Length: 370
Image 1: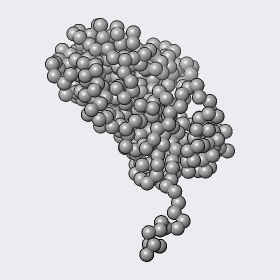
Image 2 (image 1 turned 30 degrees about the vertical axis):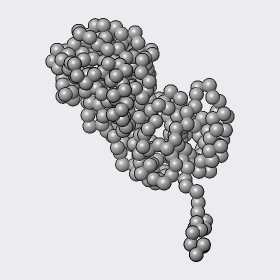
Image 3 (image 1 turned 60 degrees about the vertical axis):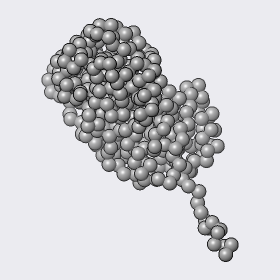
Image 4 (image 1 turned 120 degrees about the horizontal axis):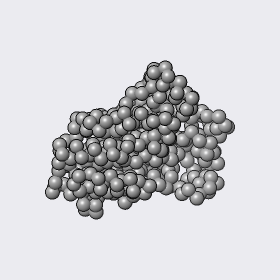
């Protein structure tokens, strides 16, 4: 009788998977479909995400992650790898394409190490994954190439839908037998978090029109920023048409820009740039009835929490990094021969953004707003 209560022989411990996360907010949001598919494929595994300290709050409370390990900018490769070694992971997946990400898994002694095939990384991975079909690498166009495209007046070749970065991360998850069928990026925000943010920042449900969010910055550079006066004109028109209340978002570096725009919008506008944590930003964006934004990390976050989004694109490609899988997102762009150029600063006249009038954005917003 006693033998019946003994555990089965040769029981292997549950799989422990480490995912080395990416370093930027927008890219991190675009990895969520892969993380969701990985959780579906390995429901019994313990899934740990290694993330930069600045992004740790993004992953707290998400159902597809069991644990978040944060590292600070001051931590060396050796220190991070030593911490990972103590966890005894059975499998590691490196989402970034960097050499460091592969080295972290190797130095941690993880037996199965998966990552994208890139020069100099193959020795540190047990499985180098070739790019998926249709993959397109982002490459900055030179000023000479831009002038040549303008002279020909023909657009660059079309970018296939399967080149979107979401597919890149799904392809890596597929190396662990996860489905590569695309999903819209998704992040959960609890109602309690939204209530807390409403109380803290005065984003009351009642007492006025709907809350519209505005994100005028873009950390990458000026070639991704619609001119501030265009944001002001669009915000003023939308306030007149919908009686909306505006709340501005951004990082610490966007405080002055957001403050100037907030002062110029008719009526009261709330400037929260540099005042929210990442979790508070996610909750505040979900509260908004509409978010008007440049192509930037918070744009991806707004779409992932379910807010209607109108995104203005300039030097970058919505086919590669836009919120195209989010049904409530609308892209506004000006087709010009030199876009996308992927440059931080425009070497000519920023025609890709200056060619977008406020009326086009207002029209798109009214289609997506309440």
